[in-house]
Image (cartoon, rainbow, N blue to C red; front, side, top):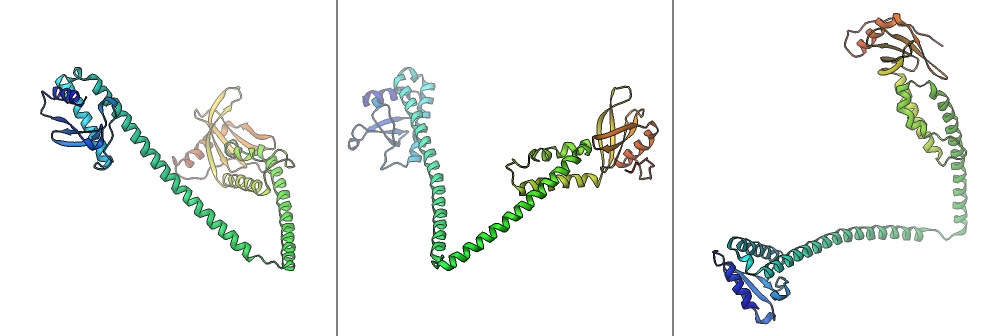
Length: 319
C-alpha cells in the first residue's frame, strides 16, 4: 500500500519541482513519515485508514498542524497543476476529508480547553469568595457570647430597633400616599410637554396604595423624581411645536411658549392664529387672541436668539 501511495505521489509530482516521499518507520507499526522537498513532516497513520496524526514524541502539535496543513495544500496544488487528481482521487479525497476533520477536532479541543480554563478561573474565584465568607461567619460564630444575659440584652435591643424601623416605615408610607394623591390631583394641570415627560413616573404611582407591592422608599423616590421634573419646568421658559384646532375646527401647527406652569401663549407660522392658555383642574384652557400674534412671535424670536432682547407686553391672568 505504501509503494502504491509513493507511486501515486511520484506521478502527481512528475511535472513539479516538489518531491513528496513516504518513509516507513518500523518502530511505529503501520505509521509512515512524509517528506516534502526533503523536509520531514510529522508521522502519519496508514493511508488505508485515512487518518493523519502528529508523532507525539518528535513533533510539536502546533508545528505539526501547520506542516500537515502545508503538506495538504501543497499536495492539492500539485494535483491541480499536474493533472494528478485523476491518478489518486480516493487518496486525495480521503486526505482532504481527514485533514478537515482533524482541524475541526483541534479547534474543538482548543475551544473546550479555553472554555474550561475560563470556567476554572471563575470557579476558583467563587471558591475563594465562599471560603472567605465561611471564614467570616466562623469568626462571627466564635465571637458570639454564650452568656444568656448578654443574648437577652442584644435581643431586646434588636426588638426595639425593629420597632423604631417599623414606625419610620409607617411614617414614610403615610407620607408617600399623601404626596401621591396630591401629585395625581395636579397631573391634569401639567402642560402637555411636561405631562409627556413625566408620564412614566406617573405610571409608577400605585392605583391602590393598600395593595401595592412597592415599598415606601421606592414610592418616595418616584415622587421626588417627578417633583424634580415639575420644578425644573416651572422655573424655565419652554417653547415647543404643537398642533391646535382653530375656531374653524381645522388643525393648525403652532409654536407655544410656556412661562413655567402658570401661563402659555401660542401663534401659528402664518401669523393668522394666536392665543393664550392657562391651567385648570380639568386641563389647559386655550383662548384665541389674534391681537397677540406680533407680541408672541417677538417673544419666541427673542427666546430663539433670533431677535435682540427686549420687553414684550403679554397679558397675564393671576388666580
